[in-house]
Image 1 (cartoon, rainbow, N blue to C red):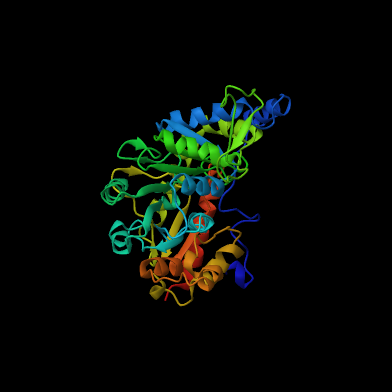
Image 2: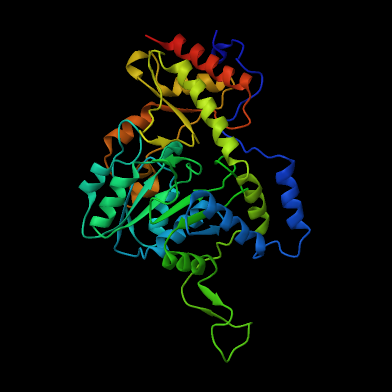
Length: 391
């Protein structure tokens, strides 16, 4: 009997869909900063930035207090302003498009690819106008988009190409780490992301102009130091209307320690995803994620898709039933233009593939600290619930 109907759940304790993996080395790194003279604006920030840039192969990395702040800074650095349009995907967290609104620009939503669930380059082409300033793709679930066609399209139309790689630090595209394919790429350090800094974000880029504007924006638009010969080291000037989006050394210390473990984290995520793929590939009514050729996913999320025509109940009943089994399933994401704020602004859209995906998807637990029994419990619960509800 299903737990939702009074039966015994598969697990006695709740298994979250995602969770940070913290060890004693991480804790010691933070403690060292707490004992140091600098809790913020100190040397550990630059150490972390250098380590991130080296890891992905970019020339520069600029850290921020969180991923949303990093995106906002990237849009600023790109020169996005009122009257501009930014084309992006509706299957993302609202921060991706909100950052365009912060700059006074208009988000334009293009539909997704039916196979990868990432932004479709052909659908982006349909949305291009004279007002288009930037294309912003999202590596949904950790799977890289097909970067080359997006990059070619941006260059052809003289657009800035920004990648929201919140899910994809550690993923690869054509044998190279994600982070060098777009003009600017954002990675997030939220607790459930590939590595964590508690909160935090970073923009990686190969362009010195973007680097300089990112640094300026994150600290009130202020330039400091020896910028006028007749003034002392205390002198500073505000050149732009920036924000206080600085990362602390406490965050950077945790991120730096976490980065040393990212390859083991990604390997564990890939192993869990492989176990899920093997268990679910022949299951009636369930579609497993596809993998884009010449890429390796970071597997931030594992999203199953339900063929609802095969079931006698809707997605909500299946979702609630899995939760009752103590499996912390989730849904990522509600199409952004469906949110009331966007509706009230008149930014409604019609992305058929995105809406179909939203109605049919469920996110399963996946994070490095899951043990073999956790994975078995997820597989058992999915089998138990779906078989009960098949037509």
